Image 1: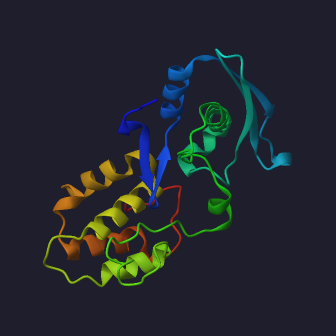
Image 2 (image 1 turned 30 degrees about the horizontal axis):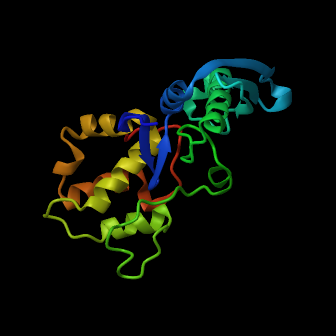
Length: 217
């Protein structure tokens, strides 16, 4: 089984697989059908939580059933009007993940870590481990490290990676493209000082990232 890199996205220093990638792998191993059922309609009484059940069947006869939920509390602001559709996509993705036995986490899904930890993982600096720095420092530490780099020279890889992470956290898959359009040039062409300025704009003082979007993105 093999799929292209376009089916993956790097987020918070971790590699996530897109729904399209799971679907592609499922077709490669013999996908027979995917059926979904709306289990709970979102309402004020249930916290506006939509729940779907998905049933994936392979040509081998194996069946995989999973559930997916979505609510205003675990989706970005732009997705809030579409929580039912998001819940259905999450249920199908989880079912396909079981069917394909893919180990990578699902892009767009919500893990327990994300639910209980408001700080996203930082992209580790390639040189930080050699100096004894923790590889999974929080976003505050990564931002401070990036800001400490003197201006004038070309931005370091750690700064570019952090900007990409922030852009994707704030705007999803199109975050990097939208940020580069706003800046007017590719992130790789920024100076260290410019990169620091944009890091400050997107995540001042290392505050938790607003997954729903930000004006500066």
